[in-house]
Image (cartoon, helix red, strand yellow):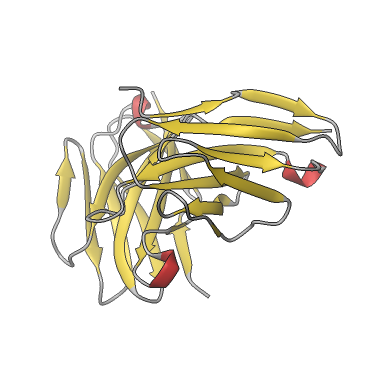
Length: 114
Length: 113
């Protein structure tokens, strides 16, 4: 059975800290790995990764994928209270009628204290 | 450009009642999805529509039906609501090829008493 596992499930840090969120997966016909940020409402897209070893970066956030070891990390440097959210990892598969469907992990709840 | 919109935002039902959740997107996307999100469970796929005219079951389809009314609209129906269907429901959409990125609506919080 395909699965996506995120760790830790929750994390409390102070402003200015650097955090690393983990996502491992066991998925047949892997195609992509995506990170989303979810505050009170809808998940908003952060990154999509398809190639190993190539870092994607947006401001203080960055992510990298390791397709050999089947995991990805999301780094946030110099955290701010506005980074408090649930971060979701999802994997896209590439077969048959499920093409384009995502499997989501349970998320990591990040709390940044002032 | 509103993106993905959902109605209603909140709903309370009694066990056995029926209702339809509406979803529309104005991004000319081909594929649309319905998810439910429960505490500690992440997002789970209920039904999806890869393109206009097609629908398929996802991971947790029991108790739900869907209609892809046209390219823009994808509705989710609960025929006889049960307390186990208390959840937050999200609709999402994406282009059919070139990316797996899905864009989400604001969600509907449903409580079944």
